[in-house]
Length: 540
Ligand SMILES: [Zn+2]
Image 1 (spheres, rainbow, N blue to C red):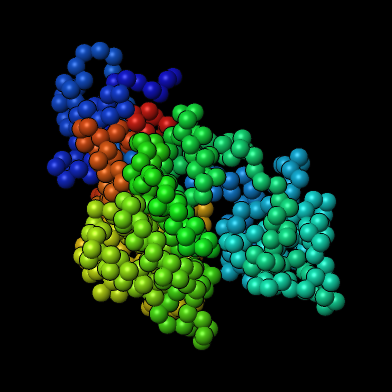
Image 2: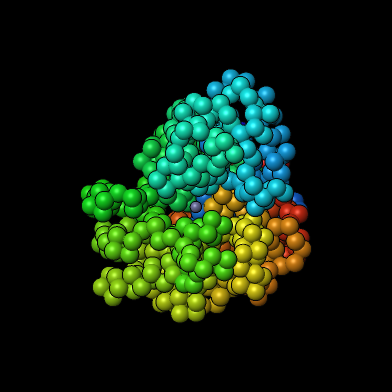
C-alpha cells in the first residue's frame, strides 16, 4: 500500500487550531498541502473529479502535526543506539542493562551508555564502581557518562586510559579512590573522564544517518512531525543536510547553531557576522532557527544561575556559563544580522541578565520581529520578567516533560512550595507571553502526549499529587503549545501549526480529543496516525 497520494481526503473529528474555523469534519489534501477544511461536501467539492484516497479516522481526533520546540533529535538518535540507563532505579538494573546490551552487540568494541541517567534515581544514591561493572563486563571497556559532568567506568577502561593509583586529580576534575589510592571508576567533570571519553570510537557517518532514520520513525509514532534542535555544531548540521539531500528527513527540522562561549569572543562572533545566512534560511524540511546560547547550567546539577544561593549550599548560586559582556556582544550581533537568539536560562539571575540585555537592544532594534526566546526559564521568573518578555515579544520554550522528570529531585532540593511555582506556564500565558512546548529529549522523554498531559495536570514522576495546580493550563492552551505556538517558535507559522487551506498537510491523529477530554485521560491517549506533507508516516 502506498502512503503517498496526490489527492486525499481526511474524514473525522478535526481540531484545526485555526481561530477562524476551530472544528471541522473533513480536510482535502493535494500535493502535500491542505486544499480545504470544512464539511465533507466542501472538502469533496474542492478536490473535484479524479482519484482520491480516503483516510477515515473513526474515533480518533485529528490535530495539527505536533512540534517539539526543544528536541536534540540527532543526539537522541545517537543515544538510542547506546545502553539505555534512563529507567534504571538501582545498580543491579544498571548491571542488567549492560549485560543485555553487551550480549546483543558482541561486535561493539566498547560498551557505552546514553548520558540521560541520574544517581538520584538509584536506590543506592551513588555511582556504580569499577568492580560492579567488571562483574557484568570484564572483557570490554565500559563507559557510562552522566549528563556531561561525571562518568562511571570499568577496570579495563581505566587501564586503557592509563588511569591508576599514580594518577593525580587533574585541574578541575576528581577521581574517586579506593583505600590504596586506586581509582574506583567514578570520574567527576570532563578533565577526569576525558582520557576515557577520547578513546571511545566516534559513530561513523553511516551509523549516524542510520540512527536518525530510526529515531524519526519513533518520533512519528509519538505524533511528532517537526522539531527544533537547539544547539547544533557544524558536524551535526552536515548529518541533517545529508538526510535532507537524500529526501529522508521526514521530521521537519529547524536547527539552532550553537554559540560556543568557550571560544574567544571574536571567533564566536565570526559565525554570526560572516556566515552570510540567517534565521529562516532553508525550506519546509530543513531550516535555520535562531542562535542558541547557554547562559547558565542546569537545576538538576546545581549549576543553574540563581538569585539566591541553593538552599543546601550556602555559597553556591550556580554558574554563569557565558559572561554578560560576551552574551551582550552576541545578542547585538544577532539583532543586527537578522539572527534570532534562544538563550538557555534556567535560574532567576540568568533570566534577569538575558532580559536586561534584550531590553537594551530593543530600545534600538525592536526584537519582536526577530522572535528572540528564553529557553527553560523555569526557576523562577518574576512578574517583572513576564511583563518585560511580553512587552518585547520574547517567547518562552518550556518543557513540561522536564518538570515531570526532574520534579521529585527538585522538590527534594527546593521544597514543594517553590516547585509549585516552577515552569509557570499559566503565568506566562496570562502575562501575554507566547509559550512553545517541548521535551529537551534525550534529557527527558520526547513523547508530546506526556507534555500535553503534564501541562494540564502538573503531575511529577513518582507521585499522584500535582505540584503547582494553579499553573495548569487548559486543553486548548496545551495543544497550542505543541502546534500553533510551536510553529511560531520554529519560524514556520506561515506554513504549519494549524490545519488551514494553503498550509502543509501535517497532521496527527490521537485516540482522545486533547481539547475536550478530561486532563487525566490524556495519560492513556495513544497516537493512531501521523502524516507529514500529506504522506502518512505512521499508522497503527
Ligand atoms: Zn536542551
